[in-house]
Image (cartoon, rainbow, N blue to C red; front, side):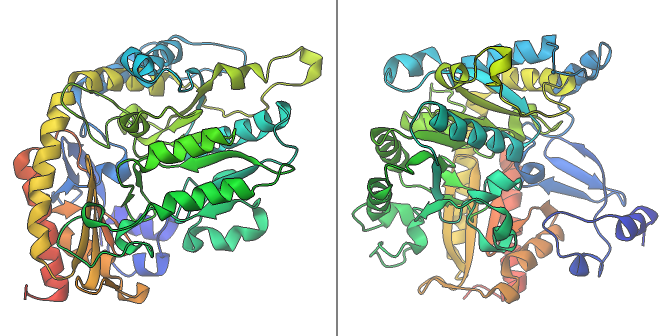
Length: 475
């Protein structure tokens, strides 16, 4: 075993990893990357099919992002945001406001909230923690509720801090910490493939396309809001717009988000959009519309918009929570009133992260056409997987895809957890030069925006070969 692998085995504890399994084999140790490819210490090259856990938008070692980082290093790496401002964070804030509150969107949807303030933090969990704290205290200070509550979707995952875990509903991740959490309510996720209200028989296409229902998933949300008591109404509803990531790449049918946003607003609550995964163009684009955020695709502007992962193009940890002037004003007061938002992070508004994030936004404005073409190639490449009997559903939203593995597509019967179906297929895919991680029985794909048509095709072929290797030949 390589010396670096031995050091890893001796000292490191990896996230979301059963270390007993990890210690049984030599890990892949990454040493370099360029474009859509990463290379290990033995010189093996792999396509980075999940953009280094959903963060790396433009590929590795992008010249513009490298240059922005090097230029900032010549000035200063970091200074505190407690009592001090800095140039990169201020410039980035202006750019973020321009893309999160575009003029054409604001004029087309004039009744939506106007985002105008940004709180920087470190990662997706902390961005969501900020949103939850602000929404909670805003509801109390404005007299909406003495004991505000939150509503979120079944299968929700919004991070690993205590507040973020409290609005999460994946027992595997969250149940062990129940004693630490505050109570939140849940409503059904619009999981068309496995929705109990969907009366359609399985077909060889995305379940959203042939579903038969009466929007019961939306009705459940209306009922939940209607039952909330005056003493303890909902401060906010938390959603990942268009698609839930860690839940298993569960996409929402068209129109779901706008319907839900209307319900939330009609009951006086706020909407928190977790765009940690979906932001910065991940959920696709339309010709002539370079909308970088998922919620904007349905004409929805949330009261809080949390971003991280792709904010710096996968270079550095940085996050932001954007909200309205009304929320900001609720925390203004005299020093001795202690209305300050008492929350912070040592690396808030870090100059290196802000400089790279600013360059990242410039790239996103310039490459909308590239993403549009990649989205089409992605759909064509995934289409070949419908021939496999163990592929139950293929769910694509822009440049995100989830391939759900089942025992038989005709019955939708899932593999038991102990079968490690998704993990085994992903392990097989590494032997065909493609790296990704499963979510249970779902193979997740999120190619970098620089991925060529040939590389996209290679990713799809690796999935096909991996499934055939694990489960046998195509019948």
